[in-house]
Image (tube, rainbow, N blue to C red; front, side, top):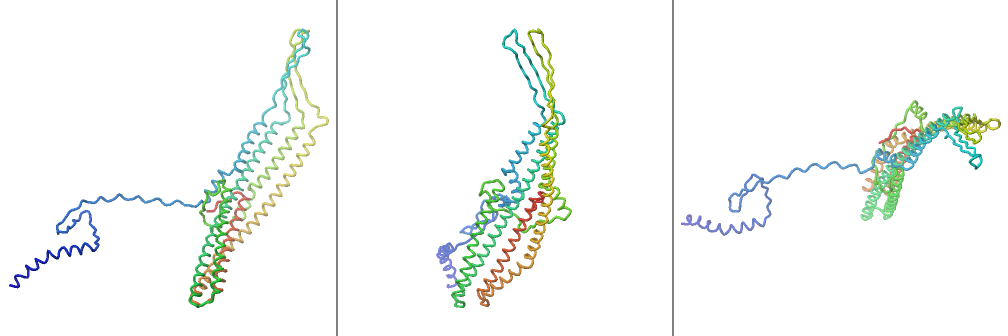
Length: 451
Protein backbone atom coordinates (compact mmCIF):
# COMPACT_ATOMS: atom_id res chain seq x y z
CA UNK A 1 0.00 0.00 0.00
CA UNK A 2 2.84 2.35 0.88
CA UNK A 3 4.63 1.44 -2.32
CA UNK A 4 1.56 2.35 -4.39
CA UNK A 5 1.02 5.72 -2.66
CA UNK A 6 4.62 6.91 -2.97
CA UNK A 7 4.47 7.76 -6.71
CA UNK A 8 1.18 9.59 -6.20
CA UNK A 9 2.67 11.77 -3.46
CA UNK A 10 5.63 12.66 -5.59
CA UNK A 11 3.33 13.60 -8.48
CA UNK A 12 1.30 15.82 -6.17
CA UNK A 13 4.35 17.59 -4.79
CA UNK A 14 5.97 18.21 -8.20
CA UNK A 15 3.53 20.93 -9.39
CA UNK A 16 3.99 22.77 -6.09
CA UNK A 17 7.75 22.76 -6.38
CA UNK A 18 7.80 23.81 -10.06
CA UNK A 19 6.89 27.52 -9.46
CA UNK A 20 9.53 27.77 -6.75
CA UNK A 21 12.18 26.24 -8.97
CA UNK A 22 11.12 28.43 -11.85
CA UNK A 23 11.33 31.56 -9.67
CA UNK A 24 14.73 30.52 -8.37
CA UNK A 25 15.92 29.92 -11.88
CA UNK A 26 14.63 33.36 -12.94
CA UNK A 27 16.64 35.05 -10.17
CA UNK A 28 19.90 33.57 -11.53
CA UNK A 29 21.12 35.46 -14.64
CA UNK A 30 21.63 33.26 -17.67
CA UNK A 31 23.42 33.97 -20.87
CA UNK A 32 22.34 31.96 -23.85
CA UNK A 33 23.65 32.13 -27.35
CA UNK A 34 21.35 30.98 -30.10
CA UNK A 35 22.50 30.43 -33.60
CA UNK A 36 20.26 31.51 -36.45
CA UNK A 37 19.42 27.89 -37.32
CA UNK A 38 19.25 26.29 -33.83
CA UNK A 39 15.83 25.85 -32.10
CA UNK A 40 15.10 27.73 -28.90
CA UNK A 41 13.61 25.74 -25.99
CA UNK A 42 10.60 27.27 -24.18
CA UNK A 43 9.77 27.16 -20.48
CA UNK A 44 7.33 24.32 -21.02
CA UNK A 45 9.74 22.04 -22.83
CA UNK A 46 8.45 22.79 -26.32
CA UNK A 47 10.70 23.93 -29.10
CA UNK A 48 10.26 27.37 -30.69
CA UNK A 49 11.95 28.27 -33.92
CA UNK A 50 13.42 31.73 -34.43
CA UNK A 51 13.79 33.60 -37.66
CA UNK A 52 17.30 33.54 -39.11
CA UNK A 53 19.37 36.61 -38.22
CA UNK A 54 20.83 38.43 -41.18
CA UNK A 55 24.53 39.08 -40.53
CA UNK A 56 25.68 42.70 -40.63
CA UNK A 57 27.67 43.72 -43.68
CA UNK A 58 31.42 43.70 -43.10
CA UNK A 59 32.87 47.05 -42.12
CA UNK A 60 35.51 48.11 -44.61
CA UNK A 61 38.93 48.57 -43.04
CA UNK A 62 39.74 52.14 -42.22
CA UNK A 63 42.57 53.64 -44.24
CA UNK A 64 45.85 54.08 -42.46
CA UNK A 65 46.23 57.34 -40.64
CA UNK A 66 48.22 59.88 -42.64
CA UNK A 67 51.39 61.19 -41.07
CA UNK A 68 50.64 64.07 -38.77
CA UNK A 69 54.07 65.62 -39.13
CA UNK A 70 55.49 67.75 -41.92
CA UNK A 71 58.11 65.99 -44.04
CA UNK A 72 61.25 67.61 -45.38
CA UNK A 73 60.20 67.27 -49.03
CA UNK A 74 56.87 68.95 -48.33
CA UNK A 75 58.61 71.77 -46.45
CA UNK A 76 61.03 72.38 -49.33
CA UNK A 77 58.28 72.38 -51.95
CA UNK A 78 56.18 74.79 -49.93
CA UNK A 79 59.12 77.12 -49.31
CA UNK A 80 60.16 77.21 -52.97
CA UNK A 81 56.57 77.87 -54.00
CA UNK A 82 55.39 80.40 -51.40
CA UNK A 83 58.46 82.29 -50.20
CA UNK A 84 57.91 85.98 -51.12
CA UNK A 85 61.61 86.81 -51.43
CA UNK A 86 62.08 84.07 -53.99
CA UNK A 87 59.08 85.37 -55.89
CA UNK A 88 60.64 88.84 -55.94
CA UNK A 89 63.83 87.51 -57.53
CA UNK A 90 61.71 85.65 -60.05
CA UNK A 91 60.02 88.91 -61.05
CA UNK A 92 63.44 90.52 -61.44
CA UNK A 93 64.42 87.77 -63.85
CA UNK A 94 61.24 88.33 -65.86
CA UNK A 95 61.95 92.06 -65.96
CA UNK A 96 65.37 91.46 -67.51
CA UNK A 97 63.69 89.91 -70.55
CA UNK A 98 62.05 93.23 -71.24
CA UNK A 99 65.42 94.95 -70.99
CA UNK A 100 66.81 92.66 -73.71
CA UNK A 101 63.96 93.58 -76.05
CA UNK A 102 64.44 97.26 -75.34
CA UNK A 103 68.19 97.09 -75.98
CA UNK A 104 67.65 95.66 -79.46
CA UNK A 105 65.44 98.50 -80.66
CA UNK A 106 66.92 101.16 -82.99
CA UNK A 107 66.49 104.90 -82.30
CA UNK A 108 63.24 106.46 -83.42
CA UNK A 109 63.27 108.66 -86.55
CA UNK A 110 62.84 112.41 -86.17
CA UNK A 111 60.33 114.52 -88.11
CA UNK A 112 61.08 118.23 -88.40
CA UNK A 113 58.57 120.81 -89.67
CA UNK A 114 59.60 124.42 -90.13
CA UNK A 115 58.10 127.50 -91.76
CA UNK A 116 59.77 130.82 -92.56
CA UNK A 117 57.63 133.98 -92.45
CA UNK A 118 54.00 134.10 -91.45
CA UNK A 119 52.70 135.60 -94.69
CA UNK A 120 51.41 133.11 -97.19
CA UNK A 121 52.92 134.83 -100.20
CA UNK A 122 56.48 134.82 -98.86
CA UNK A 123 56.37 131.79 -96.51
CA UNK A 124 58.86 128.93 -97.03
CA UNK A 125 57.85 125.52 -95.69
CA UNK A 126 60.30 122.71 -94.94
CA UNK A 127 59.74 119.04 -93.95
CA UNK A 128 62.64 116.82 -92.90
CA UNK A 129 62.68 113.16 -91.74
CA UNK A 130 65.99 112.11 -90.17
CA UNK A 131 67.28 108.81 -88.76
CA UNK A 132 70.32 108.14 -86.56
CA UNK A 133 72.45 105.22 -87.69
CA UNK A 134 74.28 103.42 -84.91
CA UNK A 135 77.71 102.44 -86.16
CA UNK A 136 80.33 100.25 -84.57
CA UNK A 137 77.94 97.59 -83.22
CA UNK A 138 76.34 99.68 -80.48
CA UNK A 139 73.02 97.85 -80.67
CA UNK A 140 74.64 94.41 -80.49
CA UNK A 141 76.75 95.58 -77.54
CA UNK A 142 73.64 96.80 -75.71
CA UNK A 143 71.89 93.48 -76.32
CA UNK A 144 74.92 91.57 -75.04
CA UNK A 145 75.01 93.66 -71.87
CA UNK A 146 71.29 93.13 -71.33
CA UNK A 147 71.74 89.39 -71.80
CA UNK A 148 74.52 89.35 -69.23
CA UNK A 149 72.20 91.19 -66.84
CA UNK A 150 69.58 88.51 -67.51
CA UNK A 151 72.10 85.74 -66.83
CA UNK A 152 73.21 87.48 -63.67
CA UNK A 153 69.60 87.74 -62.49
CA UNK A 154 69.12 84.02 -63.19
CA UNK A 155 72.21 83.10 -61.17
CA UNK A 156 71.08 85.41 -58.39
CA UNK A 157 67.74 83.59 -58.34
CA UNK A 158 69.55 80.25 -58.26
CA UNK A 159 71.77 81.41 -55.39
CA UNK A 160 68.71 82.67 -53.51
CA UNK A 161 66.96 79.37 -54.12
CA UNK A 162 69.95 77.51 -52.70
CA UNK A 163 70.00 79.90 -49.75
CA UNK A 164 66.29 79.35 -49.10
CA UNK A 165 66.62 75.60 -49.51
CA UNK A 166 69.50 75.41 -47.05
CA UNK A 167 67.71 77.72 -44.61
CA UNK A 168 64.58 75.57 -44.78
CA UNK A 169 66.58 72.37 -44.22
CA UNK A 170 68.34 73.94 -41.26
CA UNK A 171 65.06 75.20 -39.79
CA UNK A 172 63.49 71.78 -40.33
CA UNK A 173 66.25 69.98 -38.45
CA UNK A 174 66.19 72.64 -35.76
CA UNK A 175 62.58 71.66 -35.15
CA UNK A 176 63.59 67.99 -35.07
CA UNK A 177 66.32 68.84 -32.56
CA UNK A 178 63.83 70.81 -30.46
CA UNK A 179 61.38 67.90 -30.54
CA UNK A 180 64.14 65.54 -29.42
CA UNK A 181 65.07 67.91 -26.60
CA UNK A 182 61.46 68.00 -25.48
CA UNK A 183 61.46 64.19 -25.45
CA UNK A 184 64.70 64.10 -23.48
CA UNK A 185 63.38 66.70 -21.03
CA UNK A 186 60.17 64.73 -20.51
CA UNK A 187 62.15 61.55 -19.93
CA UNK A 188 64.40 63.39 -17.49
CA UNK A 189 61.34 64.71 -15.67
CA UNK A 190 59.90 61.20 -15.49
CA UNK A 191 63.20 59.89 -14.09
CA UNK A 192 63.34 62.68 -11.53
CA UNK A 193 59.73 62.05 -10.55
CA UNK A 194 60.42 58.36 -10.00
CA UNK A 195 63.47 59.28 -7.94
CA UNK A 196 61.38 61.57 -5.77
CA UNK A 197 58.78 58.87 -5.23
CA UNK A 198 61.50 56.38 -4.27
CA UNK A 199 63.09 58.86 -1.90
CA UNK A 200 59.72 59.57 -0.26
CA UNK A 201 59.11 55.85 0.30
CA UNK A 202 62.55 55.34 1.81
CA UNK A 203 62.19 58.38 4.06
CA UNK A 204 58.78 57.17 5.19
CA UNK A 205 60.28 53.76 5.94
CA UNK A 206 63.04 55.45 7.95
CA UNK A 207 65.86 54.10 5.80
CA UNK A 208 67.33 57.43 4.67
CA UNK A 209 67.45 61.00 5.91
CA UNK A 210 64.78 63.54 4.86
CA UNK A 211 67.62 65.43 3.18
CA UNK A 212 67.50 62.80 0.42
CA UNK A 213 63.87 63.70 -0.25
CA UNK A 214 64.76 67.40 -0.43
CA UNK A 215 67.49 66.69 -2.97
CA UNK A 216 65.13 64.58 -5.03
CA UNK A 217 62.51 67.33 -5.10
CA UNK A 218 65.11 69.91 -6.13
CA UNK A 219 66.21 67.65 -8.98
CA UNK A 220 62.59 67.19 -10.04
CA UNK A 221 61.98 70.97 -10.04
CA UNK A 222 65.07 71.51 -12.18
CA UNK A 223 63.90 68.85 -14.64
CA UNK A 224 60.47 70.49 -14.79
CA UNK A 225 62.05 73.86 -15.62
CA UNK A 226 64.16 72.23 -18.35
CA UNK A 227 61.03 70.67 -19.82
CA UNK A 228 59.30 74.07 -19.99
CA UNK A 229 62.33 75.67 -21.63
CA UNK A 230 62.51 72.85 -24.17
CA UNK A 231 58.84 73.39 -25.03
CA UNK A 232 59.44 77.12 -25.51
CA UNK A 233 62.44 76.40 -27.76
CA UNK A 234 60.28 74.07 -29.84
CA UNK A 235 57.67 76.80 -30.32
CA UNK A 236 60.38 79.25 -31.45
CA UNK A 237 61.83 76.69 -33.88
CA UNK A 238 58.38 76.07 -35.37
CA UNK A 239 57.91 79.81 -35.91
CA UNK A 240 61.28 80.01 -37.70
CA UNK A 241 60.29 77.13 -39.97
CA UNK A 242 56.96 78.81 -40.78
CA UNK A 243 58.80 82.02 -41.68
CA UNK A 244 61.24 80.16 -43.93
CA UNK A 245 58.39 78.39 -45.72
CA UNK A 246 56.30 81.54 -46.09
CA UNK A 247 53.27 80.11 -44.26
CA UNK A 248 51.32 81.67 -41.37
CA UNK A 249 52.72 81.16 -37.89
CA UNK A 250 51.14 78.30 -36.02
CA UNK A 251 50.21 76.32 -39.14
CA UNK A 252 52.81 73.63 -38.36
CA UNK A 253 52.45 71.57 -35.19
CA UNK A 254 55.31 69.09 -35.62
CA UNK A 255 57.64 67.68 -38.24
CA UNK A 256 58.36 64.10 -39.19
CA UNK A 257 61.89 63.02 -40.03
CA UNK A 258 64.90 61.03 -38.94
CA UNK A 259 67.24 63.04 -36.79
CA UNK A 260 69.91 60.35 -36.81
CA UNK A 261 70.18 60.31 -40.62
CA UNK A 262 73.52 62.01 -41.12
CA UNK A 263 74.53 63.58 -44.45
CA UNK A 264 77.09 61.80 -46.56
CA UNK A 265 80.39 63.48 -47.29
CA UNK A 266 81.40 63.76 -50.98
CA UNK A 267 84.81 62.67 -52.15
CA UNK A 268 87.50 65.05 -53.30
CA UNK A 269 86.65 65.02 -57.01
CA UNK A 270 82.92 65.46 -56.44
CA UNK A 271 83.54 68.24 -53.95
CA UNK A 272 85.82 70.10 -56.36
CA UNK A 273 83.24 69.78 -59.12
CA UNK A 274 80.47 71.10 -56.88
CA UNK A 275 82.63 74.06 -55.89
CA UNK A 276 83.26 74.94 -59.54
CA UNK A 277 79.53 74.95 -60.36
CA UNK A 278 78.32 76.54 -57.13
CA UNK A 279 75.89 79.46 -57.59
CA UNK A 280 78.13 81.90 -55.73
CA UNK A 281 81.20 81.21 -57.87
CA UNK A 282 79.20 81.18 -61.11
CA UNK A 283 77.64 84.48 -60.14
CA UNK A 284 81.09 86.00 -59.53
CA UNK A 285 82.24 84.74 -62.92
CA UNK A 286 79.13 86.19 -64.54
CA UNK A 287 79.98 89.55 -62.97
CA UNK A 288 83.24 89.43 -64.93
CA UNK A 289 81.39 88.73 -68.17
CA UNK A 290 78.95 91.53 -67.47
CA UNK A 291 81.78 93.96 -66.75
CA UNK A 292 83.46 92.96 -70.03
CA UNK A 293 80.18 93.52 -71.90
CA UNK A 294 79.88 96.96 -70.31
CA UNK A 295 83.43 97.78 -71.43
CA UNK A 296 82.68 96.71 -74.99
CA UNK A 297 79.60 98.92 -75.00
CA UNK A 298 81.59 101.93 -73.86
CA UNK A 299 84.11 101.28 -76.64
CA UNK A 300 81.37 101.36 -79.27
CA UNK A 301 80.01 104.58 -77.82
CA UNK A 302 83.34 106.20 -78.56
CA UNK A 303 82.63 105.95 -82.26
CA UNK A 304 80.51 108.77 -83.77
CA UNK A 305 76.97 108.18 -84.92
CA UNK A 306 75.74 109.30 -88.32
CA UNK A 307 72.36 110.96 -88.78
CA UNK A 308 70.86 111.02 -92.29
CA UNK A 309 67.78 112.94 -93.35
CA UNK A 310 65.53 113.38 -96.33
CA UNK A 311 62.82 115.96 -96.87
CA UNK A 312 61.35 118.66 -99.07
CA UNK A 313 61.16 122.43 -99.16
CA UNK A 314 58.54 124.67 -100.79
CA UNK A 315 59.51 128.25 -101.59
CA UNK A 316 57.06 130.69 -103.23
CA UNK A 317 59.75 132.43 -105.26
CA UNK A 318 60.88 129.16 -106.82
CA UNK A 319 57.42 127.92 -107.47
CA UNK A 320 58.17 124.21 -106.97
CA UNK A 321 59.05 121.67 -104.24
CA UNK A 322 62.77 121.15 -103.70
CA UNK A 323 64.16 117.88 -102.29
CA UNK A 324 66.41 118.04 -99.21
CA UNK A 325 69.09 115.53 -98.15
CA UNK A 326 71.19 115.91 -94.99
CA UNK A 327 74.01 113.96 -93.34
CA UNK A 328 75.40 114.95 -89.94
CA UNK A 329 78.08 113.41 -87.72
CA UNK A 330 79.76 114.69 -84.57
CA UNK A 331 83.49 115.29 -84.75
CA UNK A 332 85.25 113.27 -81.99
CA UNK A 333 87.73 115.99 -81.21
CA UNK A 334 87.47 116.22 -77.42
CA UNK A 335 84.99 113.62 -76.17
CA UNK A 336 85.81 110.13 -77.42
CA UNK A 337 84.25 108.46 -74.36
CA UNK A 338 87.74 107.70 -73.10
CA UNK A 339 86.84 108.30 -69.45
CA UNK A 340 83.91 105.88 -69.50
CA UNK A 341 86.09 103.28 -71.22
CA UNK A 342 88.78 103.56 -68.57
CA UNK A 343 86.16 103.25 -65.82
CA UNK A 344 84.61 100.16 -67.42
CA UNK A 345 88.05 98.59 -67.85
CA UNK A 346 88.95 99.08 -64.19
CA UNK A 347 85.60 97.63 -63.14
CA UNK A 348 86.27 94.59 -65.29
CA UNK A 349 89.64 94.13 -63.60
CA UNK A 350 87.97 94.50 -60.20
CA UNK A 351 85.36 91.88 -61.12
CA UNK A 352 88.11 89.45 -62.14
CA UNK A 353 89.91 89.96 -58.84
CA UNK A 354 86.65 89.53 -56.92
CA UNK A 355 85.96 86.28 -58.78
CA UNK A 356 89.38 84.92 -57.84
CA UNK A 357 88.91 85.97 -54.22
CA UNK A 358 85.44 84.38 -54.15
CA UNK A 359 86.83 81.10 -55.51
CA UNK A 360 89.56 81.01 -52.85
CA UNK A 361 87.19 81.96 -50.04
CA UNK A 362 84.53 79.49 -51.13
CA UNK A 363 87.00 76.63 -51.36
CA UNK A 364 88.48 77.42 -47.95
CA UNK A 365 85.07 77.75 -46.27
CA UNK A 366 83.76 74.53 -47.79
CA UNK A 367 86.86 72.55 -46.85
CA UNK A 368 86.68 73.86 -43.31
CA UNK A 369 82.98 73.02 -43.04
CA UNK A 370 83.59 69.52 -44.43
CA UNK A 371 86.36 68.91 -41.89
CA UNK A 372 84.12 70.08 -39.05
CA UNK A 373 81.26 67.93 -40.32
CA UNK A 374 83.53 64.88 -40.41
CA UNK A 375 84.56 65.57 -36.82
CA UNK A 376 80.92 65.87 -35.75
CA UNK A 377 80.03 62.62 -37.50
CA UNK A 378 82.88 60.83 -35.70
CA UNK A 379 81.70 62.32 -32.40
CA UNK A 380 78.14 61.17 -33.02
CA UNK A 381 79.27 57.65 -33.83
CA UNK A 382 81.41 57.50 -30.68
CA UNK A 383 78.57 58.78 -28.51
CA UNK A 384 76.11 56.37 -30.07
CA UNK A 385 78.43 53.38 -29.80
CA UNK A 386 80.24 53.86 -26.47
CA UNK A 387 79.06 56.76 -24.32
CA UNK A 388 75.27 56.52 -24.39
CA UNK A 389 75.02 52.76 -23.65
CA UNK A 390 77.49 53.05 -20.78
CA UNK A 391 75.76 56.07 -19.27
CA UNK A 392 72.38 54.34 -19.58
CA UNK A 393 73.69 51.19 -17.88
CA UNK A 394 75.30 53.16 -15.05
CA UNK A 395 72.13 55.16 -14.47
CA UNK A 396 69.91 52.07 -14.37
CA UNK A 397 72.29 50.32 -11.97
CA UNK A 398 72.45 53.33 -9.65
CA UNK A 399 68.66 53.68 -9.63
CA UNK A 400 68.12 50.01 -8.85
CA UNK A 401 70.80 50.11 -6.19
CA UNK A 402 69.16 53.12 -4.55
CA UNK A 403 65.81 51.33 -4.49
CA UNK A 404 67.50 48.36 -2.81
CA UNK A 405 69.31 50.56 -0.32
CA UNK A 406 72.82 49.93 -1.63
CA UNK A 407 73.52 53.45 -2.94
CA UNK A 408 72.73 56.92 -1.70
CA UNK A 409 70.77 59.49 -3.65
CA UNK A 410 73.95 61.41 -4.47
CA UNK A 411 75.16 58.44 -6.53
CA UNK A 412 71.81 58.38 -8.32
CA UNK A 413 71.98 62.11 -9.04
CA UNK A 414 75.54 61.77 -10.34
CA UNK A 415 74.59 58.88 -12.64
CA UNK A 416 71.51 60.76 -13.80
CA UNK A 417 73.55 63.89 -14.48
CA UNK A 418 76.11 61.89 -16.46
CA UNK A 419 73.40 60.24 -18.54
CA UNK A 420 71.62 63.52 -19.26
CA UNK A 421 74.89 65.22 -20.18
CA UNK A 422 75.63 62.42 -22.62
CA UNK A 423 72.17 62.75 -24.16
CA UNK A 424 72.57 66.51 -24.39
CA UNK A 425 75.99 66.17 -26.00
CA UNK A 426 74.57 63.71 -28.50
CA UNK A 427 71.70 66.01 -29.43
CA UNK A 428 74.07 69.00 -29.66
CA UNK A 429 76.41 67.07 -31.96
CA UNK A 430 73.47 66.15 -34.18
CA UNK A 431 72.37 69.79 -34.28
CA UNK A 432 75.84 71.01 -35.24
CA UNK A 433 76.19 68.30 -37.89
CA UNK A 434 72.95 69.25 -39.59
CA UNK A 435 73.81 72.94 -39.33
CA UNK A 436 77.17 72.36 -41.01
CA UNK A 437 75.54 70.25 -43.71
CA UNK A 438 73.02 73.03 -44.36
CA UNK A 439 75.86 75.56 -44.57
CA UNK A 440 77.64 73.40 -47.15
CA UNK A 441 74.40 73.16 -49.13
CA UNK A 442 74.05 76.93 -48.95
CA UNK A 443 77.50 77.45 -50.45
CA UNK A 444 77.42 74.67 -53.03
CA UNK A 445 73.71 74.73 -53.78
CA UNK A 446 73.32 71.19 -55.11
CA UNK A 447 73.23 68.78 -52.17
CA UNK A 448 70.63 66.04 -51.97
CA UNK A 449 67.86 66.38 -49.43
CA UNK A 450 68.15 64.20 -46.38
CA UNK A 451 65.06 62.25 -45.18
